[in-house]
Structure formats: structure tokens, C-alpha cells
Image (cartoon, rainbow, N blue to C red; front, side, top):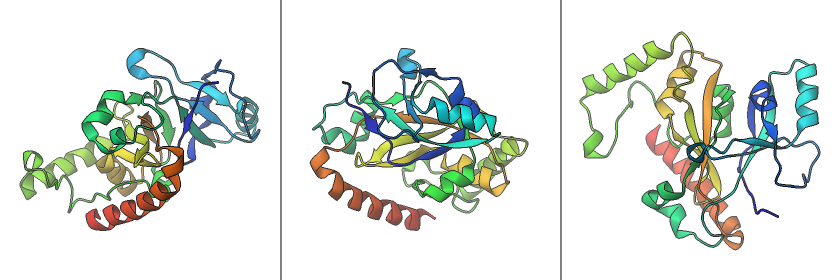
Length: 228
């Protein structure tokens, strides 16, 4: 049976986005009949996302006119089980990274409540990067942020989904990988529907997961406090 990795978080996603997925054929036995699980495909390899578990729940939710359902995301790692080095090095992660074939819709308030953002952007700290290559004057930063606000005020553009990387932090905790400014503007302007795409590389070795979970939770709090 295929060894699967699972998201650290459960996501509230538009039920209609999930209903269109075909059932997976990998023969996975769902452990909980109340779970909906999406199996990520691979956008670059034209491998489609599929539904691993939860078809009955989805059908019932649609019948009850529910907009969002709780979903776990599974993926097949392209790195070895005991490869922890790749998780720490950005360039290595890029070599093995996969993206979901589909985008999914959610409310940005759900994402904010999950505490998986690595920073909280505002007009005051927008595009204030430490890397000298990306530094801008205050006028340039504010102008760019205002342009982003203007582009989103009438609704979120699905061409630019927020990238949520599964188990990004130490191979144990999901993080928003790209799209912090879009998240900020959507929340600021009261946008209730945004699009997200999931990405992944691998997960921490089993024996290290309890320790990595503690470190990851501390690290994300430090990052958020430092950059907020």
C-alpha cells in the first residue's frame, strides 16, 4: 500500500470544488468514515487530484446546502522517509515540490484562525523584505500595496491562488508559503472567498515528529510576533 503523508491541519473548503474530483484508485482504507481526504496529484506532471475518502459526506453536505466542509489533504512524498535534510534547505525543497492540480476556495478568515501564516502583512510593513534584492522605498512599498488593494476590491482573482505548503515547517506543520499580502488585503477588504493551491515536499521522520512539532509551534509564534 502507498505510504501517504497528511496535512497537519484540516481545511474548510468549498464542497463543490471537492465534489468534482474523481475517486482515487490507490486502494487506501479510510480510518474514519467522517473524514474527507483529498489526495494531491501533481500539476507539473498532469496528475489530477482525487478524492481518497468522504464521497457520502460530500453528497450529504450538498443536499443540506452546506458551503464548506472540513478536509484533510494527503500526498505522496517524493523524498525518502528518513530524509530530513531536504526539509531544511529551500533549494532542495524546490527540486521535489509538487502542487495540487486543482485550486480550492475558502474564506480567508478560516486561514487566519488556523494560525499558519508566517507573517501578518499590513500597509505599514508591506513588502518590507530583509533581502537587499527585494528592498523598496517606503513610497514604492505603499504604492504596490495600494495597487494590490485596488485589484482585489471587486473579488479575488483565481489566477493567483495562495500557496499553502503542507508540512512546510520542519516537515511537521503546514504554512502559508506564498500570498501573505493577498491574505492581508482580502481580510482588510472583507473578501469572503479566496482561492488556494496546496503544495508539498515530504514529512519529518516518525521518531522526530513529536520534537519537531514542539519546535515548529514555537518557531511560528516567533515569526508571527516578529513580522506582525
